[in-house]
Image (cartoon, rainbow, N blue to C red; front, side, top):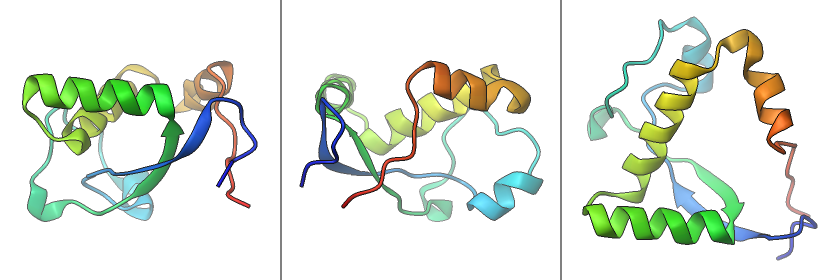
Length: 101
């Protein structure tokens, strides 16, 4: 199914994370390291085909899971961009609401 955004398809990836959205609002800053698989929750996200290809290549070449690559990248992003600037940063880089039709 097409999302209406050029270059995007409906690739789905499981993303491990350490907190639910509700708990993340109350939690202290995330540590940089990947959390325990026992504490992971499952997410399904749409990403561009080119990012999906690069994600698979990185995970394969480094013999790690795709969800580990995503979690580390998000932890790095959250640690480097302040909560106050995150929305601006995301929109400057093309973020928008994506809804499947």
